[in-house]
Length: 312
Image 1 (cartoon, rainbow, N blue to C red):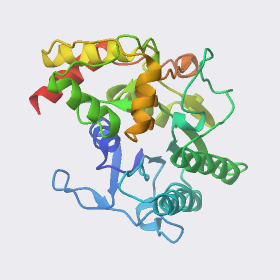
Image 2: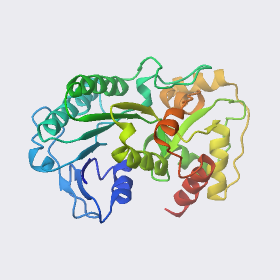
Image 3: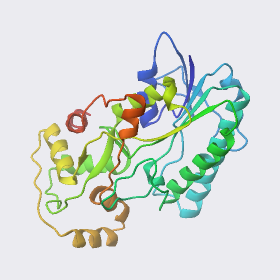
Image 4: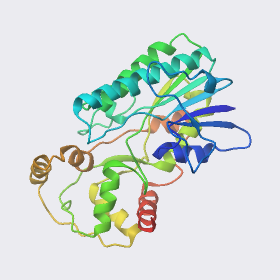
């Protein structure tokens, strides 16, 4: 099998490239820049409506599209919006159009649970839940999903959409990286009264699920919400990270209302919601339809994230 992987130098793509490496399959790793760590990485065209992917798509059986534009706090809203539209929507559609023309059999698109919303209140998200994106990034992912579905309908190319929640490991970017640094600093944390539940997915679990979706017949033309299958509170998460770092985590009590107000005043509302609100996913379809089982438990993965962060 010949597989084209975009975003091969990113957080998910690097690990996925390692896992997919096999004497039986040919992996074309693509990234915007050449990689010193992986000299075999092909420099991909820019993700936009004018990109020419044809030279890289020749003979490809499966495209795994991980590349995309994520949040960048340094950008203005207008610049970010243009980037989300150009890269996450137009660039994705251009790649898919040329994949169909090249007779690619399957296109796997990594979307985001943000398409369903940023929190749950008593009812877990599943594949039948309505879409309710609140952030521009999630809106761009939803538009890309919808346009991919319209494009592939009636074509010979199968579409697989995966919506993961927060993906974590010691080298995870964004808010999880900030959380690791806070736990490592050993400062007391105001989470004793937060009784939320968060579905997340360990990097190794997400990569293994993508691996299964590449070849499993039942993945064709399906949407999957995928997680570790274990939902933890923010207090449990930081305690496990601290244990992995061999640090005692001290939690103290601050009311959620005060925490929320403080986060808003500091411009950290999104971070507060991601860490302290509940977001629960029912990922049973990934198990029942594909027979997939997470390769690592949430507890094991969080301990390992802490250990690896300490050693970095």
